[in-house]
Length: 297
Image (cartoon, rainbow, N blue to C red; front, side, top):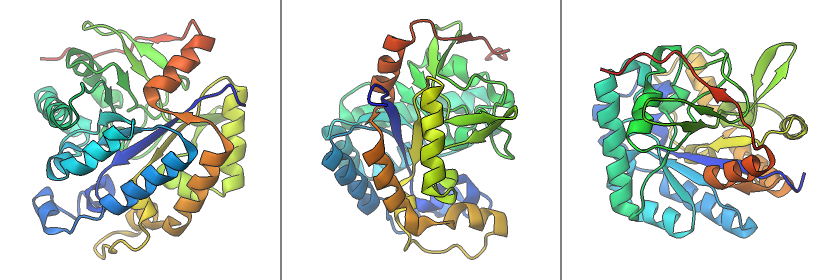
């Protein structure tokens, strides 16, 4: 598997900004919480530096505005900086105009901090679904070349199960955009998620490793996504959560760092842009996907 370059991504947000907490913690309360993101981000940077790997960091604009030094540290280490929106709002809960404003604001914040153009995006909670396919047109118009907002599974909050499971191009009136979906394996006609977030924390490591190998045998790179708060098992516990949200957020936090270390050691990793280019060099004719895009007003 030495010829496979996998995609390592980090969604940079505070522990209190996750969609699981949206009905519990108002955005007006965000400034009342003490930031905890710097330490786990620096831990990730050290883990990556020790292995000489680069990652794509999808950064929340709200956070970047308050911690520009941390974002410059990530960029200076040679990692790709992408947008994770400004306010971590689900795309399908916004109008096209609201989404465009949120996207362009985040891109400006990040480009002003790093001095480089932002060309990669990941939606909060993978919220490009059948209800928000119009977002691709706006992403392309705003200069995004690489997106990783599609999860080809059924889920109560996100999912586009009919989408291809390998990287693919999307035609828009503003030009093509590359979509790199979150990793899944198809078993008996059903897509099962692999190697990210709560799924990564929930699955035993031997299963994650086996599923990654299966993805390689199918000719695809693995897409890993991790959040800094997943390496912070001492984070404050939110007491107002219902059981499903509590389980999704807190399951196996203490095991994340060890699992991630093993995954980094067992496979080859790179940024979204670099790994996609590597994959295309071996797969010259990727699929073109043309969803039924709702016209953007």
